Length: 235
Image (cartoon, rainbow, N blue to C red):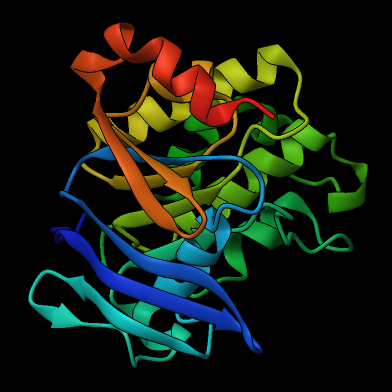
């Protein structure tokens, strides 16, 4: 696995047309950490991931990978620098098999997982490797969406709502996978509504509201901060 670098976001502003979605996002993710962006729907969490990946055209501020500025870079360049994005909609190819979905993305850096490694991590997919995407359950599709970016050699994973709408048993499996990825030294920036799930994994939580960070909660402070967290996340 190639060595990851710190990811730093400074005074990040972003727009959809004339509507401003991010208002000065500031946070960092150190190599090997799992960090979450928490907040209600519409807070700007997904826009932040899309901005990091270069998918938002109109934005200002700084996005740095180590000492390198990525703000003006194209998505394909950012991907080659070891950043991979798993969107909430998953984006798997429905007409292709599990094997074909896994082998279609290019390897962009050395150190990516082999198919054997991936199937050891996701035994459900090993059993379905010849099945088309349309034949997979929602949980299997989510596993495939995460698994697909692990072959590429990426060292920083941007995961958007990986447990949305999934059964508790699948949520538990995905949590175990993220824990194993951290053990391998990968860095994970996780957007997640399910705080119970996120709290077991993350080193640090950033609370997002109206396109900015309004609070930072370290893993060691979660128990003492639960009433504050519940207030942030309540509808």
